[in-house]
Amino acid sequence: MTTNVISVPSAPFSGQKPGTSGLRKKVSVFQQAHYLENFVQAIFDTLSGQQGKTLVLGGDGRYHNDVAIQVILRMAAAAGFGRVLVGRQGILSTPAASAVIRKWQAFGGIILSASHNEGGPHGDFGIKYNLSNGGPANESFTDAVYRRTQEITVYHTVDAPAVDLGRLGDVSIGDMVVSVIDPVADYAELLESLFDFERIAGLLARPDFRMRFDAMHAVTGPYAHAILEQRLGAPPGTVVNGIPLPDFAGGHPDPNPVWAADLVGALADPSSGLSFGAASDGDGDRNMIVGRNFVVSPSDSLAVLAANHALIPAYAGGLAGVARSMPTSCAVDRVAQALGIACFETPTGWKYFGSLLDAGKATLCGEESSGTGSNHVREKDGLWAVLYWLNILAVRDTPADVIVREHWQRFGRNVYSRHDYEGIETEKADRLMEALRARLPELPGALCAGQRISAADDFAYTDPVDGSRSGRQGIRILLEGGSRVVFRLSGTGTEGATLRVYLERFVADPSQHEIPTQEALAPLIALADEVAQIKAITGKAGPNVIS
Ligand code: VG1
Ligand code: CO
Image (cartoon, rainbow, N blue to C red; front, side, top):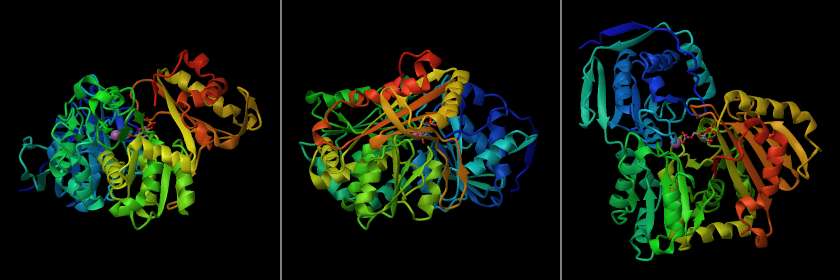
């Protein structure tokens, strides 16, 4: 059979610029004729050498996933790919896609997701490209794709019937083979090779240990059912909201105290009998860890994972180094120092960890936004983090909250919170950031809300492996004693702008560790408002989400 390529004339759309993690827009934007096709063609035009190679394709199952998969399959055939590995029903979590790319040495992968953003016909859709290392394409690639979208005049496809994605096995589109694969198998096998499954199964079988995993009606449902309940023997019902729905049952699949309030509430209620809770996001790369009446801060979680690495089979040989995004708290830095290993500070977004992982400079990475992962894939990985915690709990036989408290006693506590101001008019958000930038030279030494600022800058990063440079990655205001306030605008939203304010204060004295987080951070919250004029410029009385 030969592939008859059809070339369809098209014209550029404005705004097809990938953000922190791919291109995210309203579903209605993606539903415009040629919109998805143009972006996919821009990716394929930016690649070279894909002829005859393998592409991995899947998404988080949100609304429009099924339509987009069929479009991309036909375009992949026209672009000359030899094979596409596509998850059954078009499903692949982000970490599973990364695992499949690596295991089968694919040329790259396309992941359809807007992650934690809401779904459904009025929700968001998204698309991103991952390279052959399994990780998100770097900035130079996404910049090139964007440039291509601005000059596109044609896209290429083929005439072929829709592939039945419900049936495992191979079919052809022209010369290209489409292999419909089990979305869970390769990923579950990989996780099983990292952790002590026998020990975790023992913990889950104990009558005095009960866990709940909330899949938030997003992609991790089938993965959690297969791994936690089927392979590890957790009682049925351990996984809740485990059936993926195209609109996530109307919620935001974002595992934070606001959107996962049910889980947090259940762990705070002794009558639930629960001892450990966890949740993941739309595409399965984020994690939330909850102990009894205790939400583990993601920054603390990264530090705890690093400090306990010797208990985990895959990491018992030692960590090469750790890496965190700049706004993530410095808790893990203290662990790295104690271990005598390097700690890297990168801009926000997983794409910056790839080169460190590839070069063997870092083993564990994490972000304050509920993302942790390791060199087993090139994405953050929600269920990986949950299994890591379960492995620690199984070995130490200590509840999660006690593990964190003991960690604070040993290393001190980096009290931490993020305040999100959502739905700000873009013009106001830009004005706020520009005003802050303009004030940077005068801030060091200044007194603000009664506190002395010691340094202030706009974070810029030079990749230690490839030397690439990324500027304007967030305004940092540093105070004496390790306190910080960081300001940046979100790069994943689809409506207006979201201002993220990251607040951190180091508390060494154990007698002060139980002070409620917002209370401990109150002086910094006041400083943030005074220095950036948040209320005055945005007109908002307070943040929409505090995590
Ligand atoms: C947010 C998080 C960032 C994360 C990104 C993608 O980006 O802050 O840490 O890497 O989402 O995660 P931003 O630009 O909105 O702050 V996911 O799970 O949405 O793919
Ligand atoms: Co995600």
